[in-house]
Length: 445
Image 1 (cartoon, rainbow, N blue to C red):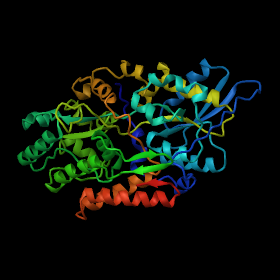
Image 2 (image 1 turned 45 degrees about the vertical axis):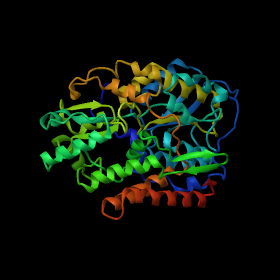
Image 3 (image 1 turned 60 degrees about the vertical axis):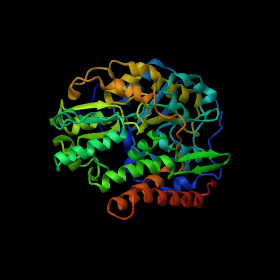
Image 4 (image 1 turned 45 degrees about the horizontal axis):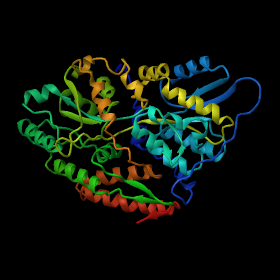
């Protein structure tokens, strides 16, 4: 896996959570899901079809240039209009004005929000449904609703445990395979050195917590006919919250905000011995903790039961086509090519260190080379296996920004002694149901 010298936090833009304008949700219909059924064909004007594409991925312009060279009848112009929420706010404005680009970059967790605005085209009539088997299975369930295909998967964020082998060796810690072993390591490490911790629990990082809840088998949302089922405080979510509450209460983990200078220093100087993160975390560590080169390794996420092999996901995005396009067929052709042509995917791996959703690309030499920073471990193999272990039935809801904002605020209160993490989940459950009902969604018990 080639890691660029500097890597923006591409896979976690919506996880810092400047909220998409609430007015985007105000456009939602009362039913559980929407989506355009447009089947408008291509125009008959002479010359190449011109398409616009909004994306934040560095280097994706090289993939677009390759597409234009190989498809003389279609020309795509790519624009970087800002990342994550910045792009989404602009998309909202464009949707209101019926002036969206032909295509756009949208993260998995935001797809239901855009579906409810009725702004996405079903790409199945244009060949999208034919490639289902070519993508990592869980990603396909994220981009489809019934027989409709509302996006083409681009990349993913399977999780793993980054750990400091030097610290584990120094304190004779066994690499944990279960969460019980992980907690035991936490206690042993902190007892041996009060200035070192097994990890950090970042209270505002609701996307990280969701990945752990996903790994535990939890589902926050579901669809019941024309209604949404909401279970932010599902049993698995409460199990995860209780586990981390125990570590927080015993002061065995730090509770600093992540992706800050102090947090990066903790990674570098060994104040924290592990980071449960997604595949993109490899570049985060190597870029921001360069002096720790050679000390880190990667292992599968600890399991709740010995012998299990289940995983969660944190991050990833898709390519969507908007209803205002006059060329849905050509737009679908581009979206499919972008995310399944090996040359295109290699450009995105080299430019942005994406971890592809296209299964054949997981064998790319770019992802499977020994990594000097990680002691020459082939860390790509850990993530390739992990990507096959993600629950395919996990579903996002239509107000995920509200959920993450409330969860983060409530977790921060709990860490500061105002209730527990489980209390925080219960409060988020209540606020989510109330918010969705006020927005006009039907919510079933």
